[in-house]
Length: 321
Image 1: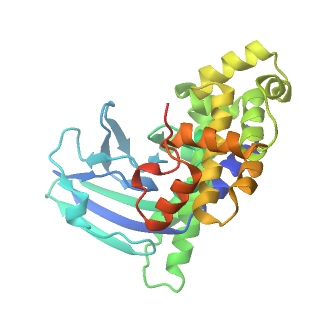
Image 2 (image 1 turned 90 degrees about the vertical axis):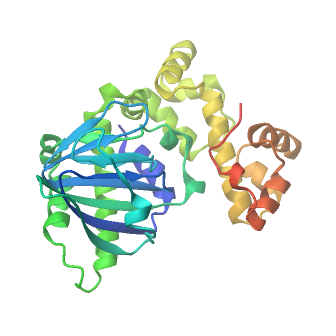
């Protein structure tokens, strides 16, 4: 994979803060966390931990393993699958960015120590290809050991839990941010066979097209021109792109344009005509029609409702068929 593509996907997220915690749990124990607007990381320093997501088979983590949740999906942790779980909101009702805590729970049995971090990012900057990442990425100890900087950073995070050190909050943010980026890079290289979108990111031709869509979405792309950018025939490109990314190239391009348009409407005062040009529409009318078809509302209404804080159903990425 072209590293520039990973940079293009992650740089706009603007990671702003991390809530990090150390969990010391004795079996029996279980925690149920709801979905959160952040990326989550769980590193097992000692013992074992079962991870459960709705509709998926449980995953057992061992000492030295890392689980990354790019979208902050709801999940359960415990000493074994099916364990009765305490809601995370009961144990930690508030988890503001920049805070840190050590939690002890469970019974007298086998001990598990977890290092957890929640990286907060700008939802409006989430690109369509980032949204397509799997709900959870699991990197085992052997994989982490093979990526020295990743494994070393996690080891230092787990081994130096001195909350009184000056600058601890900033150091933790930068450390977890580094772990997040390195873990995604490792996942693209090590876990691609199990995920079409990870294969897309490392595919030399499709990755080139994805980079073009991510960074040059204002250009007048067609399937033919994207295929030429990728160095493939039109038919082969369209079929491979759909197989790996899960949607047609032009729909993916439209998703990227609409994501950027919504961000500009919510974060700037640019005129609609300027926004339409920035996202690849040379006709303001065409932009309005496309935006309304995608989000079910006009750009003007979107901007007004966002400013009023009354647009929870219009968040970027909740596109409509």
